[in-house]
Amino acid sequence: MHDRILDAVESVLLKRGIDAVRLDAVAAEAGVSKGGLLHHFPNRQALVEGVVRRLVGRFEAVLPGEDAPPGAFTLAWLDASIPPESPEDDDPAQGSVPVALFAAANGPAVLDVLQERYRAWQERLDRDGLPPGVSTLVRMAVDGWWTARLLGLADPRGEDHRRLRALVLGLIEGRAAA
Image (cartoon, rainbow, N blue to C red; front, side, top):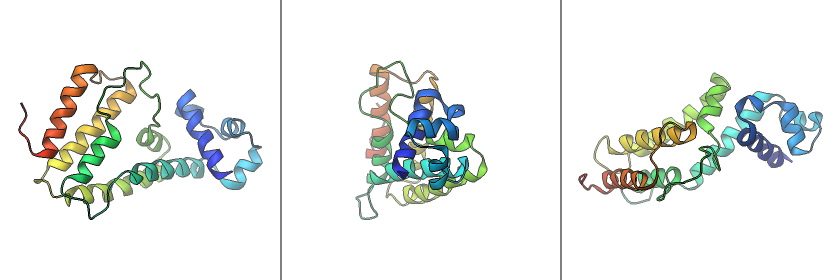
């Protein structure tokens, strides 16, 4: 039931946006009563925190452990966020939940969950064995890139996507930009 409710939050978020994530809408999407939803999540904030934690967990599941070779964590950050080929659909949010925007839109308590994870991820990036600043630059580029895609802010497509991803990959692999 817990996962079914969280699935419903993601579905409402993707179909109708952040403002549509209301207890009644989520209950209807999940096929449960509002009381049933409140049994698992006592308020909207708990519901949103549950989704943010689950999405963070999905992201962390694809990141390598501490025993990974140098650059592997930074490379996984790129691979988990920016596919090798440009998604060519017209819907920038298709297939992705805007976890950072969702967390930010729901107040400081929810954003704290994401901020805590980002601090830990940044510490791991700093220990990834690449020259100082490279992992952080990759993280900032990747985070800006997916945000631009999500918001439809002239994100690179087609050959531009492939070329820019190759540049970011070159930073990780220690190659100079061509």
